[in-house]
Amino acid sequence: MNADTPDNQDTPHSGSRPPSPERPNPLQLLKPSDGYVVTPILVWLNVGVFILMAVSGVDMLQPASADLIQWGANYSPLTLGGEPWRLLSCCFLHIGILHLLFNMYALVQIGPILEPLLGTRQFTIAYLTAGLMGSVVSLWWHDVVLGAGASGAIFGMYGVFLALLTTNWLDAAVRRELLKSILTFVGFNLFIGMQSHIDNAAHIGGLLGGLFTGYAYYLFVLRANQPAGRALLPMLVPPLLALLLAVLVYTHKSTPLADFDRIMERFNKLNTQAMNVFRLPPNTSATKLAKAMNDQGVVAWQEAIALLDKADKLDLPDGYHQHTKLLRQYSTLRLKSFKLLQRSLTDTTHIYDNQIAIYDQQIATVLSQLNAKKK
Image (cartoon, rainbow, N blue to C red; front, top):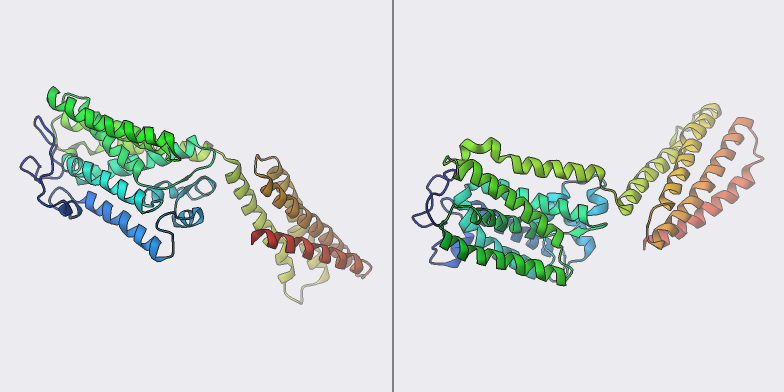
């Protein structure tokens, strides 16, 4: 870095202009150096994940949705269905090589300026805060989202710089010139996002997270004229608020697909619970087996049917309702079969055997239809 770059990563920049990287070779932007550590690591981390995806067989130009979900994309039904870690993992995935290259180019433009200013630790916190905010706002805004990319976090870095440029940190003339550049970048990318399928909600969320972090940094570090390390506690306010927002959205946001997935998860547990009756030891008495048929089986199938009634009320595509219809047929047949099996064990007769066999045949037919839909 140039002479204006502080030697101590936690010492704020002072002066009338921001630190600017004067590197003889652009490739040096990809190499860690004094005061510039996290940015190149982030670049290589994003590139490394992309290479691993490509090696595993993921399309480098247009990755399939299923592949992105498998690698940790922010997919509403799964994120809200018990996998909140996707809010951050999605920030290291990219939807094709062009998406990756554009984001990494934007990152190495802002990183050499901000990282020496904020310090390695605070730059990392700001980046993750913006990435989390982008994912959370996207999750909140869309009914169903499948999001991936570092752009929310990168927008946040531009938001940090934008916040600083609206303060008296720099001379007015320098501030006006840089503001034009940053606002052009932000405005152009938001405009492009409105014209395509780009997730502008993530961009805006990341930008807001960055703005808040930038103003916090100005108030508690630059204006207070103290090392960032001494202002660690107040500088934790932006990430803590981002986490609070994530918790609120995660606990209160509901989508039909996420609700359906939760219902199916419970249904599968009930199915396993009921069918485990047939795994009891061979020497189990008829009385105990009959009791298990009722307590583990009949009760489970009754709850399963009630769950499927809830699933029918969700606003879902027709394919989901057809699937639910088949599961209801399956559960109803199982319920009838279990009740007859319980009676047969209690009465110690075989008068229900023919009817049980008919139910078993019908169950096999429904199962074959369900399996056909999975293919």
